Length: 214
Image (cartoon, rainbow, N blue to C red; front, side, top):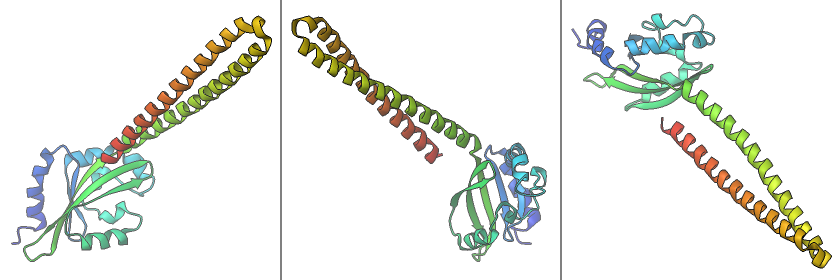
């Protein structure tokens, strides 16, 4: 009997239950022959939103299904798998669920496809957090623009006041001192705005970079 027969395969895949990462295995016909406990638990968590797009989807009945059920255009996926000779990483969005997977082919001694191991990552929470962060950054950007406008207007008022004080001569000296103080305050405010903008840009770059590396 071939060592890659379905019965023997299922037994050897049972060790994958010890792993914390969600993993499923499909055979050469792309039928899911095994899903470890972590994979079942992951699909249970997102079963409801997925079932809105994949009719009849059930985490507990994933084994035995064809992986075509995960794709709107299964023909593209099949052609990709047919040409796959090394691990392939990609993202998959189903409704509001954002998943990333790494598919690794296993071949028989004569080079035929035997199985495809798929390791999953649920990045839905990451996407939600990123969207919330983006919204927060946009709101902060709005506040910064208001602060920048106020700083510019204050500076212009201080300049106009200084000019008027100069025209008033000795009588305007006291007002000139106030105008200079206001102008200095406006300059400090403008500097603070620029520094805040730089910090926001750095924070946004770190957030986007962290998301891309996950």
